[in-house]
Image (cartoon, rainbow over all chains, first blue to last red):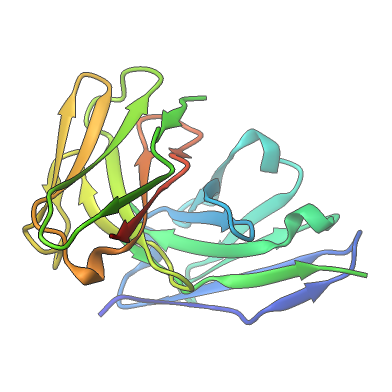
Length: 115
Length: 107
């Protein structure tokens, strides 16, 4: 069974950074892209970007290029997303998803930005 | 960026009714389209991929179709558990883009 386990909720102050994790079991992340998607409160889904864990190559949506940094550790089958210079607008649930059409999703990590 | 337009923000239908949700792409995306269902407090679930292929474990009352750049998700006989928000996604080109979602409720 494929499972994606995401790290716990984060409360970050404006201007700081947080690093989220997504640990995969039942699927080798070297054989897929890891995607990250966010969902602001009461809003729709937004694709942030993806990483190819096999070689570290990344692609970001334009608006997240200076916000998100995606990395992966194939030895632990875990992907990470760092969000920097947090603003209130970054308050959202962040999902990781894998396989060609986002077949498998994590449960999401709630990030709240507040002073 | 490719825009995915779900013109209906919400839809109300009766049990056993046929429901169709549509998504319009701003340019040709071939069959690089998926549909997801999201229930409150949950992550999205893949229903349809490649525009018309049913994802594993999804009931056969769900089906997808394409006409040019318009894509449709059809639920043949609406069930109580089908309520939720439905999103389309194009993965033809980066950045991948979602539709705004269509909220399906029971009448």
